[in-house]
Amino acid sequence: MSSNTHGLPLHTHKPSRRTTANRIFVVLYGCATLALLSHHALSLLNSTTLTSFFITLTFLISDSILAFMFATTQSFHMLSIYHKEFPKNLRRVVEESDFPTLEVFISTVDPHKEPPMNVVNTALSIMAYDYPIQKVSVYVSDDRGSALTLFALMEAAKFARHWLPFCKNNYKPYKLLDLNNKLVLPLE
Image 1 (cartoon, rainbow, N blue to C red):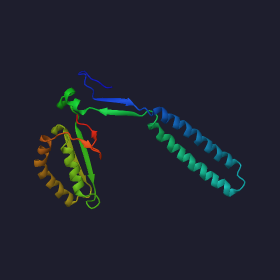
Image 2: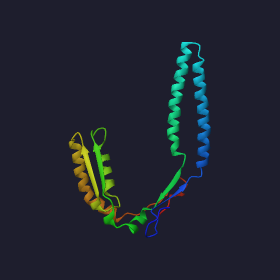
Image 3: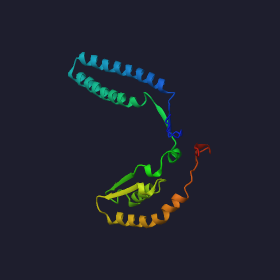
Image 4: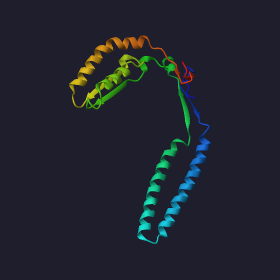
């Protein structure tokens, strides 16, 4: 658990209960994979024809690649940790003037493949963050220089003059309910 001088946690972490089961699975799966690779190697050494040699070699190479992919992805399961953040405590611990600057770069090329409305929505969503205005910068790069994207961003700037103050003044945490109306994300 992380704490600071004010005693309020900014985040906590808890190890997963499935860590032992994940480790046992990795050991068993690794043993089975090594047995399979050794079987392919022995079959390769004992192959009688050229065709069987190349087929066994292909199996050995493909299973070696799959074993490598399995081994590299299992590192995430060896020590699973659940994190919980408390962003509400951040304002109690750090002054807004000490917040880091947030710079977001939005890149777009073709207004037909990437609709300008998606670029505008992304920019407006970032600017509507509950974060100090002077600490947020949004940069949009249109590599094609489309007039449609420029027009959409100009209209978004007009809309943002009315929408962003409304978002900042009327922000309320909301409840996220599942299909059975059970609370998924509680209010903090």
